[in-house]
Length: 428
Image 1 (cartoon, rainbow, N blue to C red):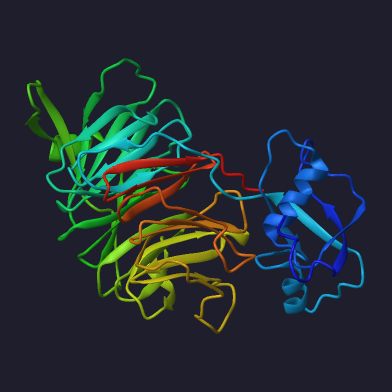
Image 2 (tube, rainbow, N blue to C red):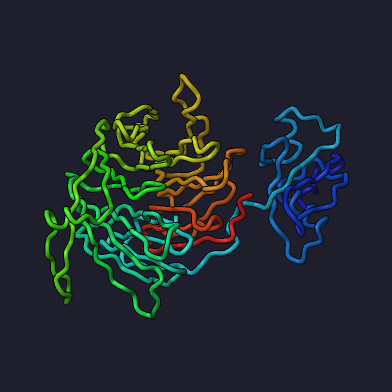
C-alpha cells in the first residue's frame, strides 16, 4: 500500500463518506491511516472496507477539493489540522474503464458530434460525413462536398428517428442532410444533401445547431459568422432549386440557401462557435478573442482576450455560464463572464504539450470537461484540481476533435484516421 514509507509512524484519524449507493457505500466509522498515504493508497483502503470482488478506482475530496498529493502534504498546503477526525468524501474515479474497437476512416477525422445517444456523427478530410451506430458500424455516408469536412452538427438530435445533419467544409459551403436512423441492413446508405448553404467567402470552420430550434450557425476563415434556416420551403425550391444528377441516380432537386444574418467583428478566422442559449452565441477566433453575440441584434456583448490564437470554445459548468477555450499553446483556459471588471481566466490547466484542438463541458456536471490536443492526448479535467483526472492516449497522432457521448463515453478523431470511443467513465 502507498501508506508505507519513512513517515508511516504518523497516523491520522479519518472517516470515509460518500454519496454513492451500495455496493460502493463503506461503513461510516473512524479508521486510522498513515499520514503519507496518497490517492492510490486511499483507494486501496476504501476497497478493503467495501470488500468488493473487483477493485474500483476512487477519487477523494476534503472540503470539496480533490486530493492530488499525499494526505499529509494536502493538509499542510490547506492549513487543515490533523488533530481532529478528518471527513474524506470518495467518488468513483473519472477514467475510462473500456476502450472500444476503433472505427477506421479513409483520411483524417476532423470532426465528431456525440450529441445523440443513438449514433456518432463524424466528418473526414475525404469530404464525407459518416454516421456510426456503434464502434465499427457505419450506417450512413453523407456525400457531396468537394473539400475536407471541418465540422459537423446534429439538428434536434434528441427527437425522432429522422434527424437533420449539418456539415461544414473547406469547399466554402455547408450541406444539410436528412437521415433516417431507423434504417437497418448490412449495407451502408449513401445520402445526398437536400440543401446547400452558400455565402461564406472562405473555408467554413465550424457549425453548430440551435439548441431548441431548426437554425444552424457557422463560422469561417472569412472572419464572419452566419445564421441559416434548415427548413425546406417551397419558395426556395422554386427560386433556388437546381436539378443535379447523382452518380447513377435519377435527377434530384437540391435547394440552395442564403444566410439569414451575418455577424461581423472578428478580424481573423472564426475557428469555433457554440449556441448555448436561444439568444446567445459564443465564438472564438485567431484574433485572440472570445466574443458573446446577442442573436436578435447581431451585436457582440462581451470580448475576452487571451493573447493566443484560439481554436475551440465551449460554454458549460456552473450555471452553464463558464467559458472554456484553447488554441495555439498548451493551456486550457476557463473564464467566468459573471465576474465583472476582469477578463482574466479563473482557471488555467497546463498539462498538454502542444496546441489544443477541442474542449467540451460535460452536459450534467458543474466541474468536468475534456480537452484534446495535437500532442495526441485527451485529458479529463475537474475544476476542483489543477491536475488531469485521466489521460486518454490511444490515438497515434494529433487529436483533432473530441466530444462526450451518452454521458459516460468520450468520442474522438484524429490524424490517425480513427474514430475512438473511451467508455465507462463515471461522472458523479
